[in-house]
Image (cartoon, rainbow, N blue to C red; front, side, top):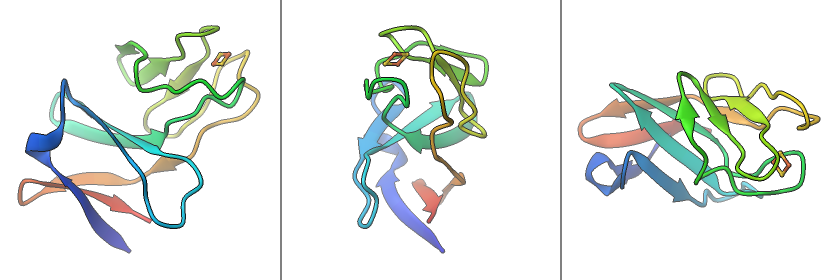
Length: 100
Ligand code: FES
C-alpha cells in the first residue's frame, strides 16, 4: 500500500526523517537528483542514525565507523552486519509516497 508521507517542500537539503506508524525505527527519506529513496535511519552496526551521513552515488555512509548502505536495496558493507530496510519511494503530486 502506498502512503503519502511528506510534501516535497518539506525536504531540507534533500533529506527528511519520518516516523511511520507500525515501524520501530525512523525512516530517512532522501532525494538524490530526480530520484527519491527511503531507508531505516539506523545503522545495523551500532545504531547510529544515518541521516547525517554523506551520500555518494547510490550509497550513504555511516559517520561513526564508515559502513555504507545502498539507498536502493539497503545492502550494507562492513562493519555493518546486516542491511537496513529499504522502502519503495516515489514523488507524485508534490508528495513523497512510500510503499509500506
Ligand atoms: S555505527 Fe555505523 S558503522 Fe558503526
